[in-house]
Image: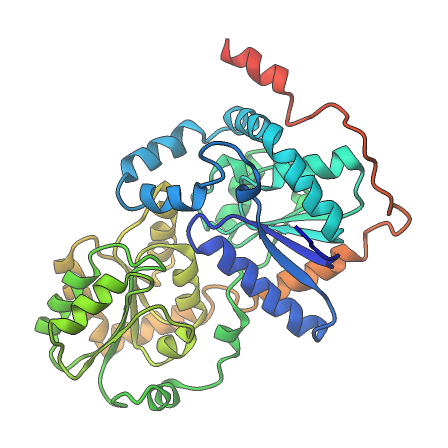
Length: 404
């Protein structure tokens, strides 16, 4: 691997873009808070497992979340309790231990920040096996519908984005002393963007007066985005559309080739989402936590089109319960909802609720917590123990007895 020692190791998996995005956001905040004095590294831990199916989890997730969604939801349900998670983790760790151990011994992090629920058990097992002095902090990247794998008392601290997540993990056995609510780890550039709506539109060379709608379907460009663009163009010819197709190059090329009105602007994968959101009046997106929370941090009303997987269902409830936007599962309802939000009185009322909807500095707070955790590392415990004691994932024997 050839890894050098770092202060913070981000342990992720690229199953969807949200786990890496959360790590990148916290790393950016860490650079700001420490003035660039701390070192960090991001590693996809599931790729190190050498376990069939798990090593290729990123590619498998893309297939499950688009083509085989029912199978994905069924898997979510079947594994959504403690003993299946403990069993699967124990089995995978048999092949994963060597590579993960090598990574931790080479990087020697003071803090491991985990942003994927299938990873923290592996990290904590290696820490226990070799008596490593690092702290392990889990950053939960789901808002409401949390899989049971997120709840693991073996970590030193679990950071949650919402009260709903906090209460669910508490009911599942996580002690309050091991949890802290900070808000979602949105990249600091969203909260730090200083331009107003007019400045953002000028930066993008957009019409400063038109009602502007940002449409996005996530990093992989899933959903019925093309159909929706056509429907909104027909229903609102005076509106200005900003369409982000993500990594779906075929969709981007098809939309451009079909010929679009001058008021429609088609983008692929972008790095300036904060500017696009600042320039928009409303954001149309699926219920993924990343883009959703970015929009709420920018104080933009949202129209949610769909939930990809059971873990996103609670995000719809979150938006509806706090009246931060609408859920529109059909193209017809999205078109009608745009009309509702064009009403000045309703729009302003939504903006007022958005003002205090979610914390804007979640990533910065998490970075500060990571630095605090570093101060708790015992400097005297610097020599790892290289023996192989018995594994403990909640008791593999106990789990196997339950299967009989």
